[in-house]
Length: 329
Image 1 (cartoon, rainbow, N blue to C red):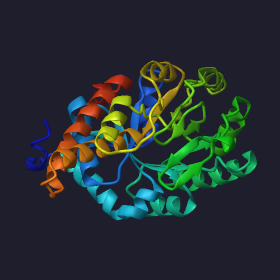
Image 2: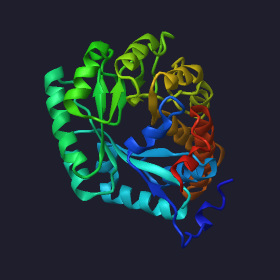
Image 3: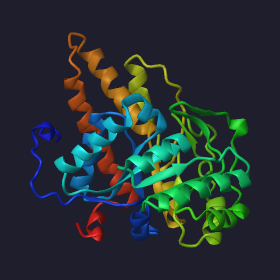
């Protein structure tokens, strides 16, 4: 239970380990994957750190440019740093997701991040290489890992919208040249996932044959799966039963697909949609059932409990549970 979260007192001996994503991937490649979870507010950060400490699992906490603009980067980083004191037995990295140069330069200069992503996937290959290489040079000078992206995912995430017609799979023939020229530390690839709550609608799932060819061309190199949420049908139905109007029939990334992807080099699985759906479900059901309530703290506590339970299952699924000991806390 998370009822004791807000009563928890930071310990005087803090054994929290803040790592780069490169350091984490060096341990997990081919064995397990690490969830990379987007956060916007306190309750999410509490739930994430509490689950990771209980599961003894390494993880990546992510902020997007949208989240930084919404909450302010200093607010987000301060909450993350506070969580590290409240949950002192955690192993994690702090990552800027889907960054562009304005946010990346600030993240590198201001500190707090151990990893950044440059998303130049919408550019042609040569421009993507040049933009990524420039980020790598500045980030590596500060011991910050860099994630790049080849291929374009469809869907909606924060203020980023990509129509399906403009998405495309990663071309395996490009990956070696890209990694060699840029010096990036991990590569996000487009193999059939999408951002947002609607995901797959035709049951096509991950294109594992493309992933396999990419791994063969980049043996041992960490690969990243964006759009890794499952989009639980029961959660969507509960939202709609409580007044929501989400489309049904969506299909996220299935458990068997994730396990196969991990064996093919996926080290990092991005999660955002699933946690948003959980927040929506908890709050819609709470205020439907308790129309006399108006305090945000009561549903907030329920959400933290629900979030923690969700993440504990995710750590188990990805094989990360119990792996924090590899990093000698």
